[in-house]
Structure formats: structure tokens, C-alpha cells
Length: 166
Image (cartoon, rainbow, N blue to C red; front, side, top):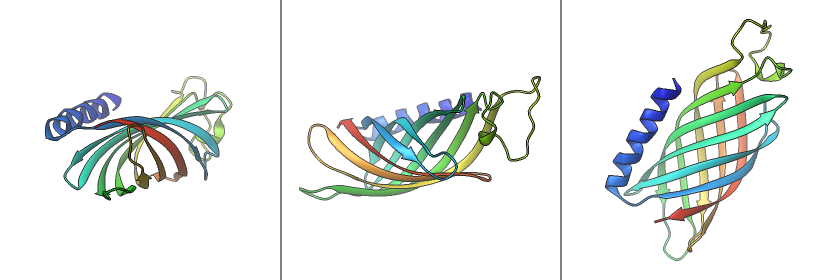
């Protein structure tokens, strides 16, 4: 499944690069709900008129488990001349948890007992919605809010970051 998602993200990247210039950056944030941890992430934004394709990856580690979210969102952008720009969007999210059997039962499926022989990863598809505000300049800081939903698992959070490029 990781291979399929990587292929999709790479394909979308080349498609969007051919359409116009792109931005890339990194962010740091905090997820509430079922996570209650800080996280790090990287993202890109490939503008296509008033829309953009925005792949991103977020990561945190908690109780021995590595939690990953990979998303490919379609954004609706509201650029402003001489001021901040805004966006809202949504898209599919791939949720990947490693080592949940090593004392991280809070990140496995509720009621699931994992034996030593079972695989210690969770791989699930879900969705996310997000919005944000970005500021102009050479280094473009931004603030974003996101809500991820994967089956019974949810994580809402906010992040601040910096974009480079275009």
C-alpha cells in the first residue's frame, strides 16, 4: 500500500510541476483527540489556478509506536494581493502505525490483543479536512489546522510552518 501511495504522490508531483511552480516546506504542530502529542511534518503545494494539490506527511512517536499520516489533498485557494492567502481542502489519508504491540496498546484497535507472532503495524485509509493561512515574502510562514479520521480513530490538530519555492 505504501508503494501505491508513493507512486500516486510522485505522479501528482510531476503532473503539478508541469502545470506551474510549487512550494515545499516543513511544519511542527500538535494533535489532540486520540493522539495528544506534538508532531513534525513536511508538505508541498502545487498550484493549478485557484486549486492546488497538497501532499503532506506527518509523524509522531508515542509509547514506542511511530504514527504516520500521509495525505494528498485538493485545496481551494483564496490568494489576496498584498496580504495573507487562505485555503481549505480535503483528501484521502493513509494512516500507518509501527510497533503498536510494544506497550502502545492505546494506538491499536480498541479491544485488540496482539500476540508476539502478529504483525506490529496498522495500515488504514481515511480522510482529512484542513484549512490555513499563509503569509508572503521570501520565507512564507503559515498556520494550518487539520482533522484526520481513520475508522474509529481521529486526530485534530494545528501546526505552524515555513514554505520555500515559487
